Length: 312
Image (cartoon, rainbow, N blue to C red; front, top):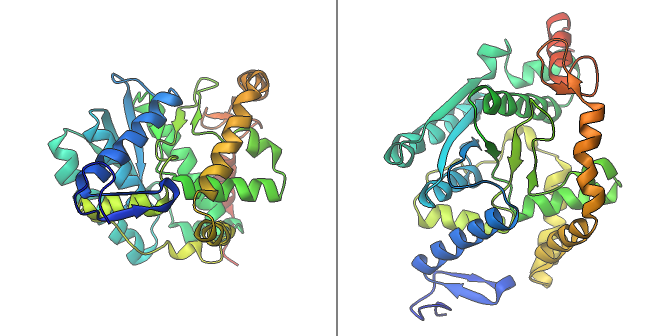
């Protein structure tokens, strides 16, 4: 198997593109896909300050690496959830990357420790408020990432969601006809109101396998284990289903998700009104000031319940 571009020995085959690449050409392919995503979705400009949400996993660290090597000003934020050895290892991976690749590009790693700031680890918080751990985790992450982006004056917040993530999320939203979520499932969400940071997903054109290959080929040391709290997640089930379809018919994930984006783009007048809807429905939280549809945002409600609650 030879590289499609330079015809030397290939190190990876990409069935959905009917192509194979050597290391050098594969790196160029990956960076080109990210550059196309950034330009096509008007995610950010060369002078913008970017905050990357990192977890210590392959996707977020690969994204940070790619943005830095493309010449962008990208710092990162790691949220330590306090999940025993898993959080200790993932934090170590993020810090090590910041000390090597990040330092050489004058990039900074910010950290937020849930145990210190919220008063308990994510498992304990979930027990106190009687909610699934993943639900509590999502609320904290969204809140803290947005707060950091606004507080430190970043122009945009970037996450490492890849094609597999977005296709699985789309499948779940379609199966349950979550129209509100479908309306906002986009690789680029604008800062519709003051207090919300713009959010983008530059890896949406790359599969999980492709991102993993990039991380391995470029010696990015990441945590391999899945979060122990994700066991039984419907997202993992949706990914498994899509992986089976992809094996039988390469390109299925891309056709599914990109087809959705094309139809979404044709409905642009309706999409353009989302900002107006947000401006009409959102107001500052009475406790913290972040935008919310209620008097108090979900994060502040959760923290209030945690202070008065008790474990099951």
